[in-house]
Image 1 (tube, helix red, strand yellow):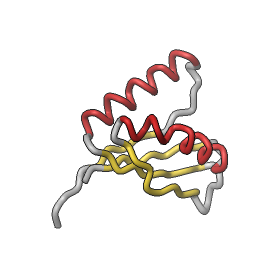
Image 2 (cartoon, helix red, strand yellow):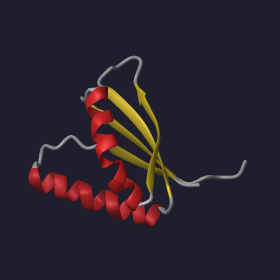
Image 3 (spheres, helix red, strand yellow):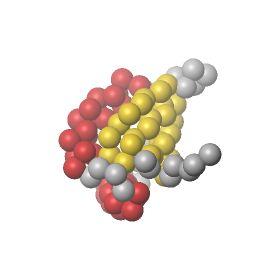
Image 4 (tube, rainbow, N blue to C red):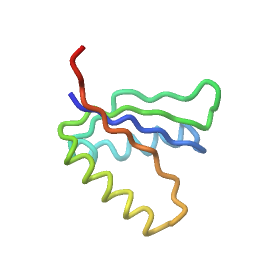
Length: 90
């Protein structure tokens, strides 16, 4: 199953939890399901989270759209770095 690993710096974990909770219905409509949320033990302002996704192409399209809109509203928007992962057999 494909996943997205996202890393965001310069944020408060409680603020990100609220945003992710509020965005969960929209994410689910696009096939993104939050599975894990971590706070970096060495940098409390770095958050890493993992989404299980239904389709990498659809997820990339959605993320690109959302990030493009955010940059259009605020060119200095703090957006997560997204890594799209495909499962590989050992």
